[in-house]
Length: 444
Image (tube, rainbow, N blue to C red; front, side, top):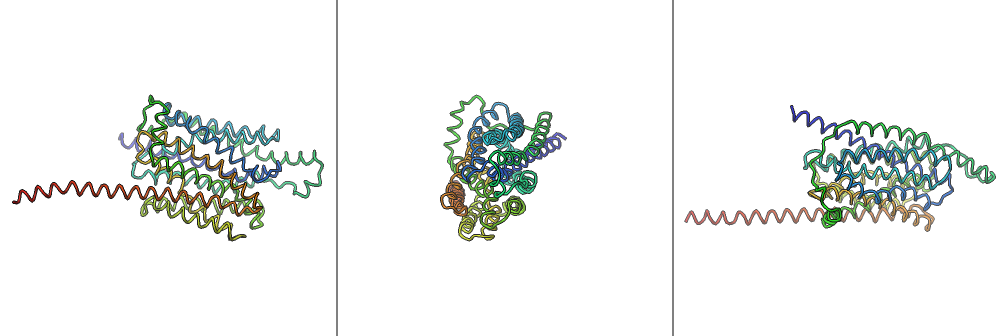
């Protein structure tokens, strides 16, 4: 009976954690809607619009280590509740941002939301890994992340229809006086108030559920009394964690480049309207991403995770080259293909990075979440290349290079597994040799 109760508790905990993956996937994938929306409202360049992503992903860098410390001292549940409260509070900040029509306040709101998401991701990813049998950890994390992919499909479709209001055209805006133009653009910017208010209320309700629910706390692999610097240094000395941090930095940068600029890219390259481009982002990239997550999870029954990661990284690099060089709808469809093949990368890199990390699991998780700062820096490189070349397609050279780094990481993991297998076989052979000698001596 106790085992049955424990099993039900574990399943409920996994469902609750999976709901968090959906939530932060949804709010993250409103950013590609916000970028063209705020770019028009504030008359921004591509590089200035990229500050939306910078505000979000710098928060991950700032908050990841505090999240790890909170998790060590207070546990997973309190860390998750704190993250949800920050998430909801940042969403409410969109109200004064729209009322004052200040781009800086929008960026501050996104930063606070992302601080909450950093706490959620730092806790939820290792929680999903530890909440069950170790041999199925990578599959379990990919399954939870699949619902993040589902949110990735839905957010652009829903967001485009509630945020991308049909406003004045550029020609109409140029015909207006400065004060009238400012008023029209401020009214368009205010379309974010309703969606983010609803989002905040949902987040606070889920925080209340977590507060009143007892969740199983996985076996701790930490010593809360250990000095923080010692814990961080030990985690960084782990070669697998260190390489995973590098790979995750470049992967997140690549993902943000592909998704956040997709609407601008499709509108510029293929002549699509912003609404049509958002539909391609949702129904195309989003569905490809969620199908890729589920397909990758199933494929791991037959192909080892690092081998699958290597193949997907090389395919994404090839498709990035097609996106750069082809033009038109061919480039758009190649970008959709990238979404399918990169779907497994974040959870697979994360799980491989903290696999067998032991006491370094929490701090390793924090370092991996810190590496999400790649999403703040690499889109700036994408925007810079696009502005300098006057062709957004050439920005895809940035994700191409990033996917090659992911391929390198997968190769190092495969090499390590091969070395470990050879070492184990050699040890087994050496152990068997004395026993064979003893048998031969006895026979004589």
